[in-house]
Picture 1 (cartoon, helix red, strand yellow):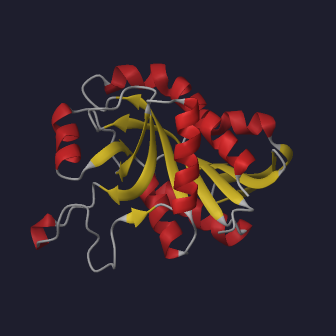
Picture 2: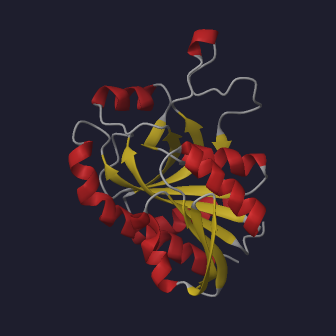
Length: 234
């Protein structure tokens, strides 16, 4: 699999600002209100962008990366809320697949998370990117890394009951607001992807307290992983 030109997406400024500091020969392009920065990162061509929060922003950004910039793979990096009870703040989740937890057509007999009349609603990460992300994560954060299902929805989860449902019914490892949209667009375009999330909170009643405090730490953790990945990709 070719990974020569990579799109790097974060939803928030904090999640991508460390990449800007190391990006050589940056060239900005603005489309649909999104700033895309092309440049060299450790000698590899990348396109860096902040999608904004939510699935629509993430989907638009991903399609533009593919159509306008010809990226050959996409890495989404940033923070998430822990759903699996074995995860703590600062731990890493590498996506095995992504699912939209707020896609709910159960009234018509579809299981929760199912996109009606589509071939699949579960979008599987690229095996090569996933394996490398997990390997690098284990090196940096041994004992604090999990592969698992990333759940996405246009909701900030801050309820223990909701967390329990997402874990028990949808087998989620973590929950956030963009990854499944990126994953779906990548799968529709046959573009390899992986989502790497560092836990900023426990997605329970304390989420509003933890989020601001730990977002910076979690973003730094994600950056260390993606930086090492880019240095090692063939």
